[in-house]
Image 1 (spheres, helix red, strand yellow):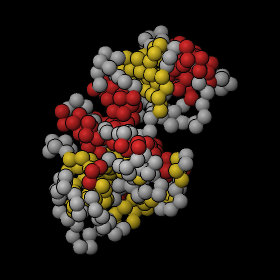
Image 2 (cartoon, helix red, strand yellow):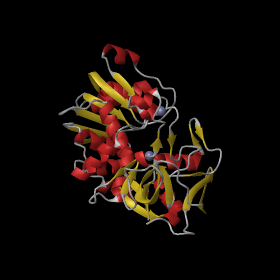
Image 3 (cartoon, helix red, strand yellow):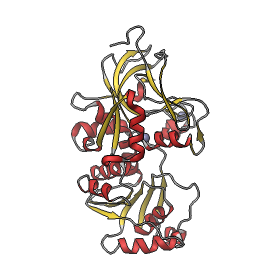
Image 4 (tube, helix red, strand yellow):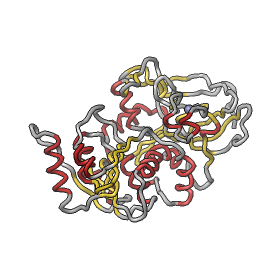
Length: 359
Ligand SMILES: [Zn+2]
Ligand SMILES: [Zn+2]
């Protein structure tokens, strides 16, 4: 299983904005506590597409060529010194963010907020879209035989769903409203259901996405409209929320996966008194919100930064069947066709939900 001498390590490298190439790089050397993973399945994420098209996201700007990809699973090919929890041949899901394990945030379990976090495919850290990736052994999660590596690669976006359900404090029977029916919105719906939600509503601008959602973990689907030109966002949001409340009840928790200002405003308006709004989507960095509603109705607004302590849970959910991620994998490509795969995601063609690169 360990890589034979001279074996290729093909990597999908973003050299600069709009410029992806396949490069053969040396197989990484392992340090203490690391394992070498032969990567077998990697999902393409919206953030990979964003780096490709724009060369950065917010404060994270590409300054040197970087390997893309962070939603991966694979097989342990080599074990570094000091690794006790894994052996060659183990099938694992890779949690892509490695924290320092020493700071206050790490020690209190909120290691997603660690200032020393190094996260795959967030500049300058190389990602996982390659044949061989070295990773901290304690951020690799062993899979039972009946969970496929393709499913396991989806534990990364599923983690966002699990973390959002926890932050929203979803309880048995809760009504949950989700904005955005892309992969993350759908996995938030799945995680909400698994946490006991009684009714999940999902809203999106794209009818085909709602059509998919009809058969995936949601009870009702709402087609959103775009705001008309000239109408202030808050006015539009009030009008649209009123329209939605003709058929929907106020929600115990609202999860916004769009980042759009109007959706965040509607999230507040659709929350019950004392409910929570969880902000998963990343949109405008400064937005206008109905503060009087937030105060007088005690709506809790909660930020989300990736996730923490979700991988072991995700593995158990897939193993037990409490969540089925298989329907989300709509298309697969080989590593050498990575550029085609990226184009496919960008165009959202043929009902693509999750496009994976497999080996
Ligand atoms: Zn992702
Ligand atoms: Zn830390």
